[in-house]
Image (spheres, rainbow, N blue to C red):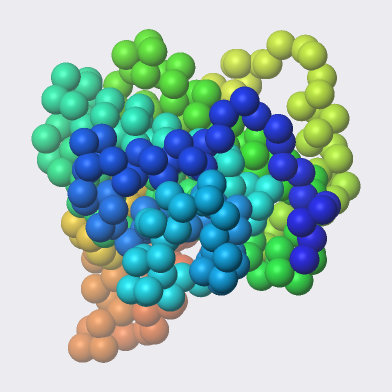
Length: 314
């Protein structure tokens, strides 16, 4: 196992212990968090010791971890193992979500969010996965095999930690400035997508890691105009992509689409997409395959945007 090569940053606070004390405190932690499958899996990846090791010999300082993880593990097998170098940042992220981000998003006075939006957030928190709130779970799933095979690079772990810290810092800054709920959700999604990029198969270049670190170590001011332009273009592309999901799945669209894009849809565009989809029905004249019409739908949206909004050009 590659424990020695993975950086465990020294901190004044033990976020893992703080997280489990919070979760096990009935007065602080809502019961639905402990009952949520995605969050219990997140908590599993926010502790530094594989469960089998905890079960065999539990150090006294880990009794809180064992108290929560054991019933979870007994109820459902969790894929993957915790990564020691990421346990603390995973715990810090979850504490920020539980204690700062969610209370702000779910309170009635937060601007930009309707009651329906809050209900959608709460429903996804209880049952769904694959969103910024569950980032430790996704990171654990995607990196466990590389970690167990001694293929996880220390530079990659450091970049993931920096990305998590950026997500936390930006969320706190927006909350301090009483930002709207949709602005916060969009920032969380874009930061989360950076984390996913750093852990999934496309990111395998050690040379790229070095280049990113050189940039991060520069002391020059951040070009906020460039950051804003990238954010704006990302929202534009995501909205175009969301139309494709919405026209196919309706109200059961992707989590991000439901939270952020729901009131921005162009009904004319949705109608055009649905008509193209209907042509793939076997009973239609000149019937062609679903995949053919899916490509036509993407081509229609790309023409609308004036650029390619999908991974592969149709």
